[in-house]
Image (tube, rainbow, N blue to C red; front, side, top):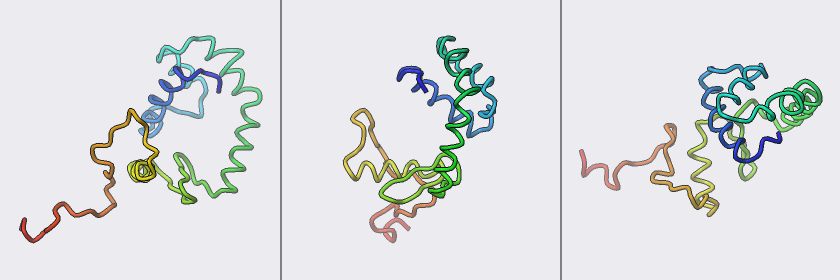
Length: 134
């Protein structure tokens, strides 16, 4: 919660791929501490007084409140995104969400979208005139 932006970015870039491929047990805070140490996050952020203390004291109560709110909003799991009142569940929607944000002029300046739509379930023609390429 209080990692600092430079550590939080590194943590998030690494935790999601590991979580999605089931290579880390995110319910075991000791596994998370091991990952943080491997990522070079200073131990003071990982041990007593910080992360480990948080997950064994007020963290469970905050998690319970977050889960109640998630149930109220019909959130099925992670990742879940809300955009313009629509719920998107699963990482497979990231390209569509990126496209919608791009269309609204909300893309990050350092983000370049060579192909903003790269979603397997969206149909898009490969050619303007399909018959000319048959």
